[in-house]
Image (cartoon, rainbow, N blue to C red; front, side, top):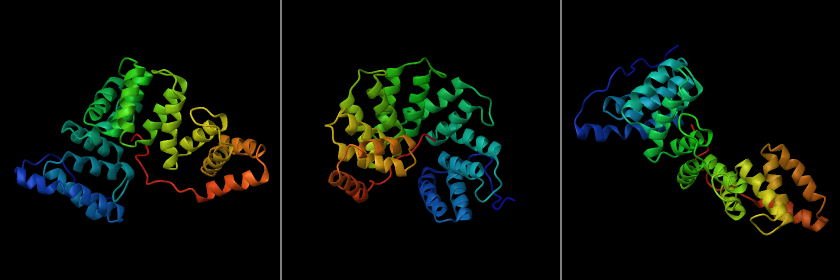
Length: 273
């Protein structure tokens, strides 16, 4: 059952002053949505959309995609994303591009996906930069270019995009598109580990265990493997136990104390959606 009834069917031309006032409706709409007031959020997104902010249409599309305050309707969501993307919403370009990439309620079309996603990347959108980098790494819709993928992931990583930072770290670890640089790899995995990312924690544990890119430190290695393990990384549990077998009782207590006293930093951008 649909709970809100006014949906966009076209953009309304308004004065620049009215448009600038309405642009505040998107962040206010997000605040309302986070507070659980979907009806208010929808009205605010609608107002922003009517005033010419394409991100209003994007967020209305998200309500349809997630079935928040309305029936789940992916086709309606895709239509709203298309309207917003046409008016240069980077958020919509990235999301619609992902739909074309997977053939999700639109025709699968790698070239169209790359056009949209990489357009979002050009605006500085971190998710767009990450996903455009993936396209270059895989050669989907664009010519495969590992160096270009790294450039895009570097840009996204500068905005603390976790997935981009992990991919960049793996590229330096494995020498893909760049010479192997274990110190840089460990530094990057350390950044995502600081946010509590399971892969970053696990890879940092491996680095401390082997002494690659950092000085070998079995207590730190055990602590990070312990933290990764509790976050569901099965390999980390095995690594933690392997390291624990090499520590004496006092060292093991110190390692566990490090893990117990550890706190994650504020969340960064988590994914490429």
